[in-house]
Image 1 (tube, rainbow, N blue to C red):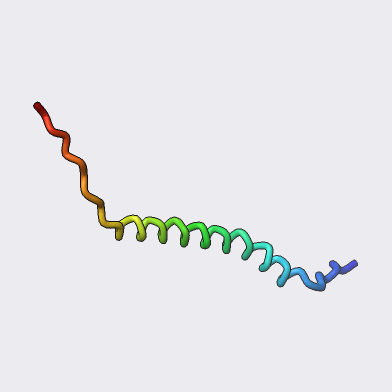
Image 2 (image 1 turned 90 degrees about the horizontal axis):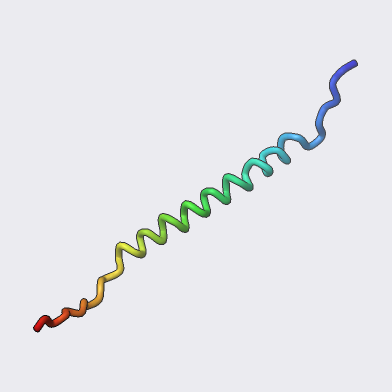
Length: 52
C-alpha cells in the first residue's frame, strides 16, 4: 500500500509557518522603531530646586 499524497500540504504548511514568523518580525519592528523614536526625543528643561 502506498502513502497518500497530500493535495495541498506544502503551501498550507508554509502559511502556517509564516504567520508566527510575520508576527515576530512585526513585534521586533515595533520595538526597534520605538527605541529609535525615543533616542531622537530632545529632553526638556529640568527644574532646579533652590536651597536656602
